[in-house]
Image (cartoon, rainbow, N blue to C red; front, side, top):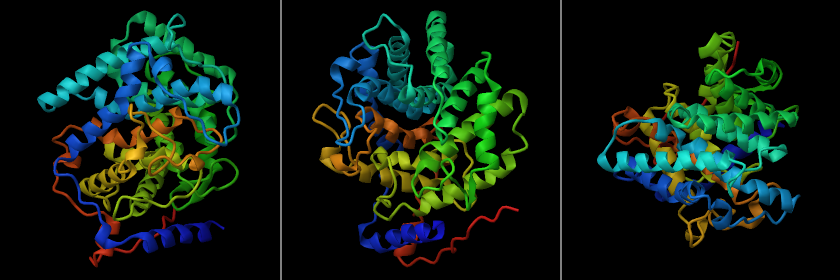
Length: 409
């Protein structure tokens, strides 16, 4: 069944891709990415900093929503946690052009205030931290804090205490037996990183299940007991495992036994993701959560940010591919409301694409494609000359190496 599914993916890729529709890379890719960050993140971070997110953010719900009242309440944490996880590396960076430094300074100020409001029970924008969906988005918040030590270091002590209290609240929720076990794991990794007592069992459980039971082969894990042909290896599984392994290994080396194997797996999956990006920046519309748009390439962006790309993927090639995805998924004027909030869809406003758990807040996982903004402008990811990605090369008739599965020994 897996073989058939993968064949269909590549069939869709090759049949839909046309060389004449290829997306040329922006002249100044970094400015394009920074402008995109500001355009999408500003409504969330600015309003939360001013304690007005709940007042200003419209909460659109999937037409298939399962729990309207609860989903509406959690949508604000969804928007904030997911936005923070994507912009965190940029906030943690230093230097750059005068304009970039000014933009970062502004977002740092806003984000510190936003965090304070999100965890302050007296604030109008105090978030819901207890329950099933809050566990998910508290983990994105924790992931953002892991990725940006600057934020943690510059929070007032009382706000730090409130952050810890909020994240401890999630321990009362038992995660679903799926990628959700990594949500608990990454929250504990946050505690580990900042020298707060953490629950090693919650971390161990997540790592062991994926490492010893849920690897299916060729760079991909099943999401629980059954394999699904979707982007969850990228949305959550591999970026979360990478953050957990790196954080805990730096503290005590507990998972050094698995790191070499995971490195092979994650590099192979990065190759697969890059090959799924068509010449025009589109990609196969498969699996749940497709309205996360460019979040489908969270893992590829994370590999570039952590400088772990395989030798088969030069950084500039990945930059071009991800730039094309950003452009394509925001090409439709219906992608944002007149006030700048995301709409449910992949290419514009397509509410039928929204799964039963999708709200306006959910959509901000698209920000995780922006992780390489945590690399300085002198890094090869930004400074190297443009290179065509695989689909562009192949559909322009350029000879290129064939793809091969990963055979782990």
